[in-house]
Length: 332
Length: 261
Ligand SMILES: Cc1cc2nc3c(=O)[nH]c(=O)nc-3n(C[C@H](O)[C@H](O)[C@H](O)COP(=O)(O)OP(=O)(O)OC[C@H]3O[C@@H](n4cnc5c(N)ncnc54)[C@H](O)[C@@H]3O)c2cc1C
Ligand SMILES: Nc1ncnc2c1ncn2[C@@H]1O[C@H](COP(=O)(O)O)[C@@H](O)[C@H]1O
Image (tube, rainbow over all chains, first blue to last red):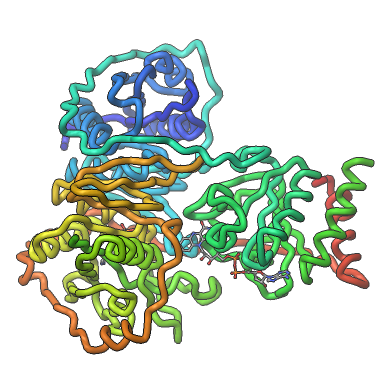
């Protein structure tokens, strides 16, 4: 596509607002668009999403495409790939950014295959190569043990972006932009999945992704009982409970508590890892924390390579003493 | 029911992080640590075997690569899979998600009839997360990613798809492609009977020509510019005390002192 031009951001909406990742991608998209000397567009897909067009402009978009249709209320692969394909062929962007979300990680690869191009998922940095003007896509690989930079010679260059990896621009309600409505034009019979039900797993207390303190437990906790002690500490610090994968797989805590490459990405002020060895896949989800504290009986555990403070010993002894002192300090 | 599972041999992702080395844009296999079937692909095998337990049928495993160690790639057979097809050739060495999905799709067409294709949610080497969706796109199949449960009734499957807040229950028409996550449940251990059967079973090995692959399409679309290990300038302060209890309490005081608390 020699005539490809512009950067297009798929901006997801939840609870009537642009998702944080959408604003972060608009911030990054703005930077890429100016490096290319091109426009930044956003696309809103869903049912009842038209109202968010001005919000996307306020966060940096020059143009907003709105594909608003009741059949797009739930994310369904066939429907979303079809409208994105149609839009991509009409707009011919050079770069398409999507969030590394449940939607983006499903949509981006299929879209890339459909458009005969390539996608790079879970990017943490995106830049324009000054000489070739191609998109440099940096993503963690091998569970976070390494990072790879990819480019692709075909347009559109498609990338999904990890949450909290880029910064949003300050919202500017006075920005002006163009809003273009596009008909979904979907053939309902070509959508081969039906969403029957959406199940929310309630986790009590503060939402893990938003918490300023996260207390996480791993295999070393040994059972659901031990997590009660972590909950006590989390409560004293007004924090949330996290976990490594084995703790979730063993059913000690809800799967929704998993932190890491294939779990949640958290960036709290304080991350407390108890009985967690610090595998690269776990660290992928928590190294954005300002202060990392580790409780582990093994002085050589990898977690101590990233932690700022640590205590070596059996957590069953060290943690209660810590919790007791913390309670004194925060109440006193 | 005919199920095809795509399973990749990878460097053991649970090898100690300190053993991980990159040289000249290539990952050096850690000495003395054998490769494994990518963990999510074992989850996909487990999902297939669960369906076979419930419905009967045949599970065929497909692995593409170079230097495929028979002991490693036969593990799904020892868990209870029925057939193993290997796409093994130096021509596959430089592939990416695009060429791999292309070659796997050709092999699947050659295998023939199937109701379901299962993949892992992402391979534990490049964490690319694309091959399954690519196969679905090339074969024109509907797909669902990130499954934690799969139930098949007649010509449909009911799938629980993980999302950050829980899961969605989605119905899909068969044949279809589904990618599987570890929440499906721990992969079963090989049984003695399974290990014996796997020893006796010779995999079918196909070369690019056997599946009619166009050599021009076995190259990469995503060009690797650079591969590097991020530097972590870790400097941990270990808090000690006369007793472990004292160390715990002193850590709290330290955090107060530096105003983290
Ligand atoms: C592709 C892929 C994706 C993955 N994604 C994730 C992910 O998102 N999140 C994740 O967490 N993992 C993930 N994993 C799994 C990961 O590789 C590790 O297996 C996992 O993180 C290890 O969890 P852990 O630290 O709790 O357990 P272990 O590695 O077993 O560590 C337990 C630790 O507890 C310590 N300990 C034991 N008893 C005590 C005690 N009494 N007091 C103090 N310390 C004690 C031990 O010294 C040890 O360091 C993934 C793996 C793969 C292959
Ligand atoms: N070389 C391969 N051989 C067999 N299956 C593969 C191969 N590469 C990828 N897959 C399948 O596709 C899934 C996703 O891989 P990836 O896109 O590389 O992360 C894996 O979990 C496997 O199920």
